[in-house]
Image: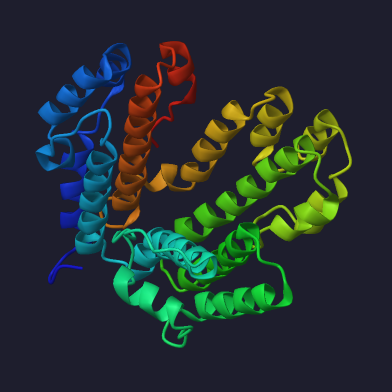
Length: 326
């Protein structure tokens, strides 16, 4: 955080940047353009600080915009717990990549610098099995993965599941100490939505109940033991049993939508709604948190549009996948 930063100044700055988010009209123009013209439109917007991109390397443009967002958030967010909760996922993603490369004995790609842990130091510690100075939850998970690989469970899934569970435990510990109640609500909602979507995905993939139980995240409002009891039911009965919970619309869409696109969009809307009522509160951290979420949505939408344009996906299919701001 910058010295002397206050919520009022931070939120005022975020409000200015929020007015510059890509709106519906420009999103429509991007979807209707060729990928080269879409990249020109983004350059006019100042995307990625004017980095010039082509159809083959627009990932660098997206990375530059994401890096700028994370840097702004670190400088302006006055609640260190909020900074940690939103940026820890990048550290855990880097840890996943490093662990997989370590056990596959392949060279590490360049890790992202969006998070809180220096990526070079993180990769060095993981390759040296030196986890002691890392967050407690991450350190334990990395040790557990080493043991699993020693005992023969050498799958990428073992890395992903173990570090995902550790990440949510780490975030829960962090947000419990935050003065912002919306943070804990946000991550409880997110855990519920991930568990719900996985309930339908695992059944669709014809995987076992034990497989599903391995994936479940703690910390949501819906008891995990109740979700396990629903595993063998058909989709409509799952949705009916979950109708009493606030996340019921996610289950309803999942039951109705075979490919889960609508359910994923509803999950994002429901999760981000944790901040909705306080998004205009000038003296709290919520408006800046909302800007972070909205800008992340914008970046994800731009990435989706460019990827679809490159692969000649139709406009209607692109539009169906776009997410709305908080």
